Length: 336
Image (cartoon, rainbow, N blue to C red; front, side, top):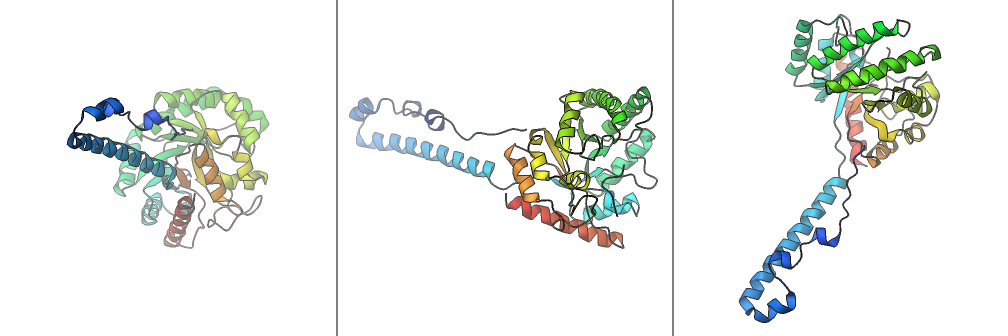
Protein backbone atom coordinates (compact mmCIF):
# COMPACT_ATOMS: atom_id res chain seq x y z
CA UNK A 1 0.00 0.00 0.00
CA UNK A 2 1.20 3.40 -0.86
CA UNK A 3 0.83 5.94 1.91
CA UNK A 4 0.12 9.55 1.15
CA UNK A 5 3.05 11.76 0.48
CA UNK A 6 6.00 10.30 2.32
CA UNK A 7 7.87 12.47 3.73
CA UNK A 8 -9.18 34.50 -1.88
CA UNK A 9 -10.18 34.97 -2.59
CA UNK A 10 -11.09 37.60 -5.07
CA UNK A 11 -14.75 37.89 -5.80
CA UNK A 12 -15.67 40.00 -8.79
CA UNK A 13 -19.07 41.57 -8.60
CA UNK A 14 -20.80 42.16 -11.87
CA UNK A 15 -23.33 44.38 -10.23
CA UNK A 16 -23.02 48.08 -10.72
CA UNK A 17 -25.41 50.96 -10.73
CA UNK A 18 -27.26 51.83 -13.90
CA UNK A 19 -25.20 54.97 -14.16
CA UNK A 20 -21.96 52.99 -14.27
CA UNK A 21 -23.33 50.48 -16.77
CA UNK A 22 -24.58 53.04 -19.24
CA UNK A 23 -23.39 56.56 -19.99
CA UNK A 24 -25.87 59.36 -19.63
CA UNK A 25 -27.33 60.99 -22.73
CA UNK A 26 -25.40 64.11 -21.75
CA UNK A 27 -22.19 62.09 -21.60
CA UNK A 28 -22.78 60.97 -25.16
CA UNK A 29 -23.22 64.53 -26.36
CA UNK A 30 -27.00 64.37 -26.67
CA UNK A 31 -27.67 66.82 -23.86
CA UNK A 32 -31.11 67.39 -22.45
CA UNK A 33 -33.52 65.27 -24.49
CA UNK A 34 -36.35 67.82 -24.61
CA UNK A 35 -34.13 70.77 -25.45
CA UNK A 36 -31.97 69.08 -28.07
CA UNK A 37 -34.74 67.36 -30.04
CA UNK A 38 -36.49 70.68 -30.65
CA UNK A 39 -33.41 72.26 -32.19
CA UNK A 40 -32.18 69.31 -34.20
CA UNK A 41 -33.18 68.67 -37.73
CA UNK A 42 -34.16 65.12 -38.58
CA UNK A 43 -30.76 64.12 -40.00
CA UNK A 44 -28.68 65.32 -37.04
CA UNK A 45 -31.11 63.78 -34.60
CA UNK A 46 -30.89 60.37 -36.23
CA UNK A 47 -27.11 60.58 -36.43
CA UNK A 48 -26.78 61.43 -32.73
CA UNK A 49 -29.34 58.86 -31.66
CA UNK A 50 -27.52 56.20 -33.67
CA UNK A 51 -24.23 57.03 -31.93
CA UNK A 52 -25.92 56.83 -28.55
CA UNK A 53 -27.61 53.53 -29.30
CA UNK A 54 -24.42 52.01 -30.66
CA UNK A 55 -22.46 53.08 -27.60
CA UNK A 56 -25.10 51.70 -25.25
CA UNK A 57 -25.31 48.42 -27.13
CA UNK A 58 -21.53 48.03 -27.20
CA UNK A 59 -21.22 48.64 -23.51
CA UNK A 60 -23.99 46.25 -22.57
CA UNK A 61 -22.62 43.51 -24.85
CA UNK A 62 -19.16 44.00 -23.42
CA UNK A 63 -20.50 43.64 -19.91
CA UNK A 64 -22.57 40.61 -20.88
CA UNK A 65 -19.61 38.84 -22.38
CA UNK A 66 -17.50 39.82 -19.37
CA UNK A 67 -20.09 38.27 -17.06
CA UNK A 68 -20.16 35.14 -19.16
CA UNK A 69 -16.37 34.88 -19.03
CA UNK A 70 -16.25 35.48 -15.29
CA UNK A 71 -18.92 32.88 -14.59
CA UNK A 72 -18.09 30.52 -17.42
CA UNK A 73 -15.48 27.86 -17.97
CA UNK A 74 -13.27 27.04 -15.02
CA UNK A 75 -9.74 26.91 -16.39
CA UNK A 76 -7.37 26.30 -13.49
CA UNK A 77 -3.79 25.19 -14.18
CA UNK A 78 -3.36 21.43 -13.78
CA UNK A 79 0.15 20.18 -13.05
CA UNK A 80 1.65 16.89 -11.96
CA UNK A 81 4.04 15.96 -9.17
CA UNK A 82 6.87 13.48 -9.67
CA UNK A 83 5.61 11.01 -7.04
CA UNK A 84 4.17 8.40 -9.42
CA UNK A 85 7.57 7.90 -11.12
CA UNK A 86 9.79 7.41 -8.07
CA UNK A 87 10.50 3.84 -9.17
CA UNK A 88 12.40 5.37 -12.08
CA UNK A 89 14.76 8.30 -12.60
CA UNK A 90 13.72 11.93 -12.38
CA UNK A 91 14.39 12.30 -16.09
CA UNK A 92 11.91 9.47 -16.66
CA UNK A 93 9.45 11.38 -14.49
CA UNK A 94 9.91 14.58 -16.49
CA UNK A 95 9.47 12.70 -19.76
CA UNK A 96 6.34 11.03 -18.42
CA UNK A 97 4.82 14.26 -17.12
CA UNK A 98 5.37 15.91 -20.48
CA UNK A 99 4.02 12.93 -22.43
CA UNK A 100 0.92 12.89 -20.20
CA UNK A 101 0.08 16.38 -21.44
CA UNK A 102 1.08 18.50 -18.46
CA UNK A 103 2.90 21.81 -18.66
CA UNK A 104 3.49 22.25 -14.93
CA UNK A 105 5.26 20.13 -12.34
CA UNK A 106 6.37 20.20 -8.72
CA UNK A 107 9.17 18.68 -6.66
CA UNK A 108 7.14 16.69 -4.14
CA UNK A 109 8.84 13.35 -3.53
CA UNK A 110 12.47 12.46 -3.05
CA UNK A 111 13.88 10.64 -6.07
CA UNK A 112 17.06 8.58 -6.20
CA UNK A 113 20.12 10.81 -6.49
CA UNK A 114 18.21 14.09 -6.74
CA UNK A 115 18.84 16.81 -4.15
CA UNK A 116 16.08 19.06 -5.52
CA UNK A 117 15.91 22.22 -3.35
CA UNK A 118 17.32 20.60 -0.21
CA UNK A 119 20.11 22.29 1.71
CA UNK A 120 22.54 19.80 0.10
CA UNK A 121 21.90 21.15 -3.40
CA UNK A 122 24.75 23.08 -5.00
CA UNK A 123 24.26 26.11 -7.26
CA UNK A 124 25.54 24.06 -10.19
CA UNK A 125 23.05 21.28 -9.52
CA UNK A 126 20.16 23.74 -9.18
CA UNK A 127 21.01 25.44 -12.46
CA UNK A 128 21.23 22.07 -14.18
CA UNK A 129 17.92 20.96 -12.65
CA UNK A 130 16.23 24.08 -13.88
CA UNK A 131 17.50 23.42 -17.41
CA UNK A 132 16.41 19.78 -17.36
CA UNK A 133 12.88 20.82 -16.49
CA UNK A 134 12.78 23.63 -19.06
CA UNK A 135 14.11 21.37 -21.82
CA UNK A 136 10.83 19.41 -21.61
CA UNK A 137 8.81 22.58 -21.99
CA UNK A 138 7.72 22.32 -18.36
CA UNK A 139 7.47 24.93 -15.63
CA UNK A 140 8.04 24.05 -11.98
CA UNK A 141 6.10 25.81 -9.24
CA UNK A 142 6.90 24.19 -5.88
CA UNK A 143 9.13 22.08 -3.70
CA UNK A 144 8.47 20.16 -0.53
CA UNK A 145 10.52 21.24 2.47
CA UNK A 146 12.35 18.81 4.72
CA UNK A 147 13.34 19.07 8.36
CA UNK A 148 13.91 16.82 11.35
CA UNK A 149 11.22 17.33 14.01
CA UNK A 150 13.59 16.13 16.74
CA UNK A 151 16.41 18.47 15.74
CA UNK A 152 17.06 21.72 17.65
CA UNK A 153 14.92 24.59 16.38
CA UNK A 154 17.97 26.71 15.55
CA UNK A 155 19.37 23.94 13.35
CA UNK A 156 16.08 23.52 11.52
CA UNK A 157 15.77 27.27 10.95
CA UNK A 158 19.26 27.47 9.48
CA UNK A 159 18.69 24.46 7.23
CA UNK A 160 15.29 25.66 6.04
CA UNK A 161 16.64 29.11 5.24
CA UNK A 162 19.13 27.40 2.91
CA UNK A 163 16.28 25.51 1.28
CA UNK A 164 14.49 28.81 0.76
CA UNK A 165 17.55 30.24 -0.96
CA UNK A 166 17.64 27.22 -3.24
CA UNK A 167 13.93 27.52 -4.03
CA UNK A 168 14.46 31.15 -4.95
CA UNK A 169 17.29 30.16 -7.30
CA UNK A 170 14.87 27.77 -9.01
CA UNK A 171 12.31 30.63 -9.17
CA UNK A 172 9.66 28.58 -7.38
CA UNK A 173 6.39 30.12 -6.22
CA UNK A 174 5.53 27.74 -3.39
CA UNK A 175 7.23 25.71 -0.67
CA UNK A 176 5.13 23.01 0.96
CA UNK A 177 5.26 21.44 4.41
CA UNK A 178 3.57 18.24 5.57
CA UNK A 179 3.45 19.39 9.18
CA UNK A 180 4.41 17.13 12.08
CA UNK A 181 2.77 14.11 13.68
CA UNK A 182 3.71 14.27 17.36
CA UNK A 183 2.20 16.86 19.76
CA UNK A 184 5.63 17.21 21.35
CA UNK A 185 6.86 18.74 18.10
CA UNK A 186 3.98 21.17 17.50
CA UNK A 187 5.38 24.28 19.18
CA UNK A 188 8.77 24.13 17.46
CA UNK A 189 6.99 23.48 14.18
CA UNK A 190 4.90 26.64 14.60
CA UNK A 191 8.05 28.67 15.34
CA UNK A 192 9.89 27.16 12.39
CA UNK A 193 7.04 27.94 10.03
CA UNK A 194 6.70 31.49 11.34
CA UNK A 195 10.35 32.14 10.51
CA UNK A 196 10.03 30.40 7.13
CA UNK A 197 6.88 32.34 6.22
CA UNK A 198 8.71 35.62 6.77
CA UNK A 199 11.79 34.46 4.86
CA UNK A 200 9.84 33.11 1.89
CA UNK A 201 7.77 36.27 1.67
CA UNK A 202 10.96 38.29 1.11
CA UNK A 203 11.69 36.12 -1.94
CA UNK A 204 8.21 36.11 -3.44
CA UNK A 205 7.54 32.51 -2.37
CA UNK A 206 4.43 31.37 -0.52
CA UNK A 207 4.72 28.82 2.29
CA UNK A 208 1.87 26.29 2.29
CA UNK A 209 0.64 23.48 4.53
CA UNK A 210 -0.74 20.18 3.24
CA UNK A 211 -3.24 18.08 5.26
CA UNK A 212 -1.15 15.11 6.39
CA UNK A 213 -2.49 13.75 9.66
CA UNK A 214 -1.21 14.65 13.10
CA UNK A 215 -0.93 18.39 13.53
CA UNK A 216 -2.44 19.02 10.07
CA UNK A 217 -5.06 16.27 10.02
CA UNK A 218 -8.25 18.18 9.21
CA UNK A 219 -9.76 21.65 9.46
CA UNK A 220 -9.51 22.00 13.26
CA UNK A 221 -5.80 21.20 13.29
CA UNK A 222 -5.12 23.26 10.17
CA UNK A 223 -6.82 26.32 11.62
CA UNK A 224 -4.74 25.91 14.75
CA UNK A 225 -1.59 25.86 12.62
CA UNK A 226 -2.63 29.06 10.84
CA UNK A 227 -3.35 30.76 14.14
CA UNK A 228 -0.13 29.64 15.82
CA UNK A 229 2.11 30.52 12.88
CA UNK A 230 0.34 33.85 12.59
CA UNK A 231 1.74 35.00 9.26
CA UNK A 232 -0.21 36.05 6.17
CA UNK A 233 2.27 34.21 3.92
CA UNK A 234 1.34 30.84 5.45
CA UNK A 235 -1.50 29.25 3.45
CA UNK A 236 -3.02 25.85 2.61
CA UNK A 237 -2.72 23.43 -0.27
CA UNK A 238 -5.78 21.28 0.26
CA UNK A 239 -5.65 17.49 -0.14
CA UNK A 240 -9.11 15.92 -0.07
CA UNK A 241 -7.70 12.40 -0.37
CA UNK A 242 -5.56 12.87 2.71
CA UNK A 243 -8.56 14.05 4.70
CA UNK A 244 -10.15 10.66 4.09
CA UNK A 245 -6.91 8.72 4.50
CA UNK A 246 -5.88 10.21 7.84
CA UNK A 247 -9.19 11.14 9.45
CA UNK A 248 -12.08 9.46 7.63
CA UNK A 249 -13.87 12.82 7.58
CA UNK A 250 -15.81 14.38 4.73
CA UNK A 251 -13.40 16.46 2.59
CA UNK A 252 -16.15 18.86 1.52
CA UNK A 253 -17.25 19.57 5.09
CA UNK A 254 -13.64 19.94 6.25
CA UNK A 255 -12.94 22.38 3.42
CA UNK A 256 -15.72 24.76 4.45
CA UNK A 257 -13.99 26.54 7.37
CA UNK A 258 -10.60 26.80 5.64
CA UNK A 259 -11.49 27.32 1.96
CA UNK A 260 -10.59 31.01 1.95
CA UNK A 261 -7.01 30.11 2.93
CA UNK A 262 -6.49 27.57 0.12
CA UNK A 263 -4.11 28.58 -2.69
CA UNK A 264 -3.42 25.16 -4.22
CA UNK A 265 -4.86 21.66 -4.44
CA UNK A 266 -3.04 18.31 -4.24
CA UNK A 267 -5.19 15.88 -6.21
CA UNK A 268 -5.57 12.29 -5.09
CA UNK A 269 -8.47 9.95 -4.44
CA UNK A 270 -8.96 7.61 -1.48
CA UNK A 271 -11.59 4.92 -0.81
CA UNK A 272 -11.36 4.75 3.00
CA UNK A 273 -9.10 5.56 5.96
CA UNK A 274 -5.63 4.13 5.26
CA UNK A 275 -6.83 3.13 1.79
CA UNK A 276 -4.88 3.23 -1.45
CA UNK A 277 -4.17 6.74 -2.72
CA UNK A 278 -1.93 6.02 -5.68
CA UNK A 279 -4.95 5.30 -7.81
CA UNK A 280 -7.15 6.57 -10.60
CA UNK A 281 -9.54 9.41 -9.90
CA UNK A 282 -13.15 8.34 -9.56
CA UNK A 283 -12.28 5.04 -7.85
CA UNK A 284 -12.40 6.48 -4.32
CA UNK A 285 -14.72 8.65 -2.25
CA UNK A 286 -13.45 12.15 -3.07
CA UNK A 287 -16.23 14.21 -4.62
CA UNK A 288 -14.00 16.32 -6.84
CA UNK A 289 -16.90 18.29 -8.31
CA UNK A 290 -18.19 19.34 -4.89
CA UNK A 291 -14.70 20.22 -3.66
CA UNK A 292 -13.94 22.30 -6.75
CA UNK A 293 -17.33 24.00 -6.63
CA UNK A 294 -16.62 25.11 -3.07
CA UNK A 295 -13.17 26.36 -4.00
CA UNK A 296 -14.59 28.23 -6.98
CA UNK A 297 -17.17 29.92 -4.75
CA UNK A 298 -14.38 31.55 -2.72
CA UNK A 299 -12.36 32.68 -5.73
CA UNK A 300 -9.79 29.88 -5.91
CA UNK A 301 -7.79 30.01 -9.13
CA UNK A 302 -5.50 26.99 -8.98
CA UNK A 303 -3.13 25.34 -9.32
CA UNK A 304 -4.30 21.76 -9.10
CA UNK A 305 -1.35 19.38 -8.81
CA UNK A 306 -1.91 15.69 -9.54
CA UNK A 307 -0.30 13.49 -6.91
CA UNK A 308 -2.28 10.26 -6.89
CA UNK A 309 -1.71 8.13 -9.98
CA UNK A 310 -1.84 4.35 -10.23
CA UNK A 311 1.77 3.23 -10.58
CA UNK A 312 2.13 0.86 -13.49
CA UNK A 313 4.62 -1.88 -14.22
CA UNK A 314 6.47 0.53 -16.49
CA UNK A 315 7.04 4.25 -16.64
CA UNK A 316 4.97 4.33 -19.83
CA UNK A 317 2.00 2.66 -18.17
CA UNK A 318 2.24 5.12 -15.31
CA UNK A 319 2.30 7.97 -17.81
CA UNK A 320 -0.91 6.70 -19.41
CA UNK A 321 -2.56 6.67 -15.98
CA UNK A 322 -1.36 10.22 -15.31
CA UNK A 323 -2.86 11.34 -18.60
CA UNK A 324 -6.20 9.74 -17.68
CA UNK A 325 -6.25 11.55 -14.34
CA UNK A 326 -5.58 14.87 -16.05
CA UNK A 327 -8.45 14.27 -18.45
CA UNK A 328 -10.70 13.34 -15.52
CA UNK A 329 -9.97 16.66 -13.81
CA UNK A 330 -10.53 18.62 -17.00
CA UNK A 331 -13.99 17.07 -17.37
CA UNK A 332 -14.86 17.89 -13.77
CA UNK A 333 -13.71 21.50 -14.16
CA UNK A 334 -15.76 21.90 -17.33
CA UNK A 335 -18.88 20.94 -15.36
CA UNK A 336 -18.66 23.57 -12.60
